[in-house]
Length: 334
Image 1 (cartoon, rainbow, N blue to C red):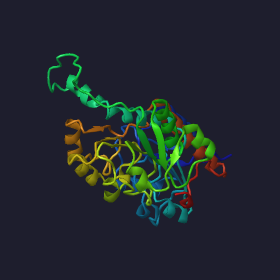
Image 2: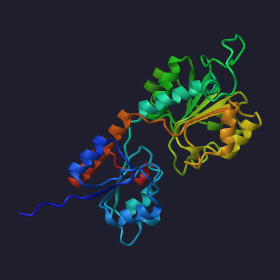
Image 3: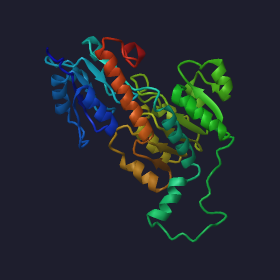
Image 4: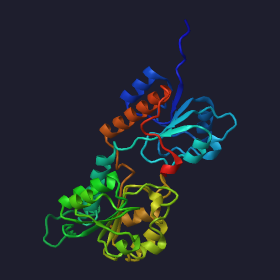
């Protein structure tokens, strides 16, 4: 009796050990044990040899990869919530199923967003660096040194009131912030009442009135440079921006110029427009205490990464059983 051949699954990056072990049990899994990012040529080769590709949000799966004459892919099971790294329309046209890993990173990302909301006005990173980078000798407590600003009573404008935006709002409300938001459409009245949230149909009008702006929308063609040069100039001089979403949502060059000129109070960034490259001007602003920078770690918890991997496995197994994967992504959803 013949044994059914396991599908070849290529995983582009190192995943938690428990997830990789389970993948080896279930599939003919080709793992990336040293976590070196695959080159575009290696990704293209994987598309020619694998039945299923498991990329991460930093792996670009573009139309030229998908439309190779000898592309064998039947499924792209993204290890990540966003799918802006994948040409979903091209995959759909070729009959390739695309999935992602939604919902499991909501609380982790919201926790980090709240931490960054606190970091800029309270000068946390600037203060920590005084002790760790030898900038000066700390003479001890002083009543007028390293003064920041309280956040209670300030207006928080959330751009994107999905799961993460709502989770940020719940945390922020506990800190005494007034919740405002811009979204494609208002949230349900019961959610708005729970959060005490004010809806702004006009993003321009909201930006001009907020003390803190939190970017929590996905990166899509419609949100590229949503915070454009024109919109950034609407922001109050005392306000600052927090971004734990995607760097491409903000016109980074203009943001830098406005902070340098004192036209925007500052920023707390976990993501960057040309990631993994970080603009040297942002680094200089961080050293000057104008911005807080983190290396895309908003969702980086052990629990979150394991749950992401479990979702990838569920999506693959459901697909192989000829059922609709629970986290399938269609072009019409973007």
